[in-house]
Image (cartoon, rainbow over all chains, first blue to last red; front, side, top):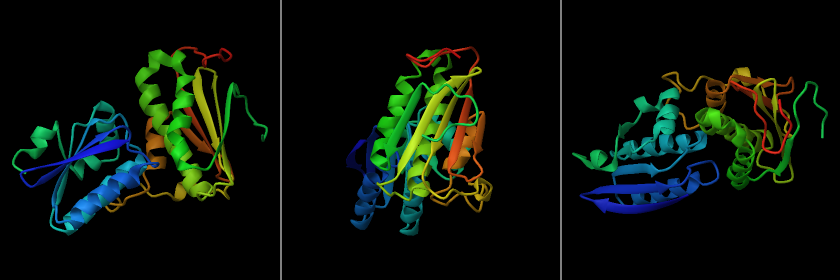
Length: 110
Length: 153
């Protein structure tokens, strides 16, 4: 997994490429926590190039969302493929996150 | 290897040291041997992949406690029209019935506890041995298939 970080109108966009799983989840977590410490509060994580997120990856997203909310911010997700949407629906995490069809929609009005 | 008590085509057996970095490669390797299941592409690539990944992850993280001196054994085969995987760790085992439902409102924001739930949701059967250190995953197939290079079910 790799990811690209960019900023647009006060929103930090993290585009993930590859699977977000137990073996690499800490890299993403560390990246977001560093941005949060630097004062960023609005985050979009885009999964357009992600085929799979395991339960550990889901857990990291839950954990990050909580930490960001505690700092008065928000984490949005975007571009989940059909399989990822299925995983979010099964675990009911689709009720916990604001999930956009694509990054443009996620950034809109953020 | 510990002898199995029930029939399973043992055409693929892996013994993997506990290293969470190795999970992705191990799953990819198993999946590459299941290409004959192409008619079941989504059930294979989503349901079976997720189940196997979660089982390996649980075995290494909780079963073997991340101890690199301990191994996880994976046995995969096709039997009676079903793809079956047994994942066994060297831990003391656990009681799967004690794992709370992660979709309950009070558990939704917990960062862990979704692995077993996903296995149960996505596989046709998930069962543990009495000790609780070996899980069997079953994905039923519509028609008889073979593992790549393996025996026909």
